[in-house]
Length: 235
Image (cartoon, rainbow, N blue to C red):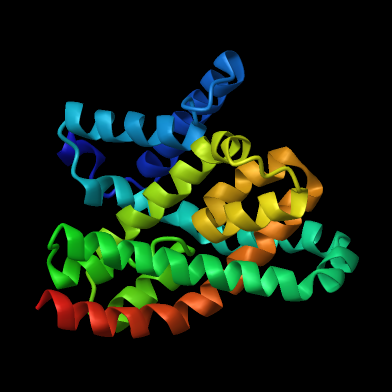
């Protein structure tokens, strides 16, 4: 099967779209948080590749073209942000303080767990930038000596957890303010989590979109500082 599909640009694209469509239909049918279209599509694609012994490179030969739409899709998140510009101006100080706190606490928690479980230094710094978009996370990971492949896995896991569990966590901690909900989701789980914020409301979507940008900028500053001391402790 791998030899037949090798060099076929349509295979990766078709498999990705079909898997996501199945995930979307299941999500619409069962209305369960765990039945997330992205999670279902990932499991279906992995299962297909393993079942038919298809190399990832063969799949990625065509699937990589879908990633070209990631940047324009992220830019489109600026639309709800623009519509809520007055709310942004009114709460600018609180927004920046909240996102900065989230970035610092996230980095310290990851570092603390790494020290607690005595993780390898390279592995630890690889997951530090997991709560920002893939492009930024990979760049930061490379800069601090991490492994980009591990970073990407961390980014995917953070996004999926945000998309699946954010409603439960917000309810558990009684976070009912729409702006706070959006900021929390965007800070913790980047664009994938923001897809859930978009379902919750326009203000949540706007604040989550803003959090993606601010978190990305702050992560570039915070992660190198934390990783420097983390390497010292773990090596």
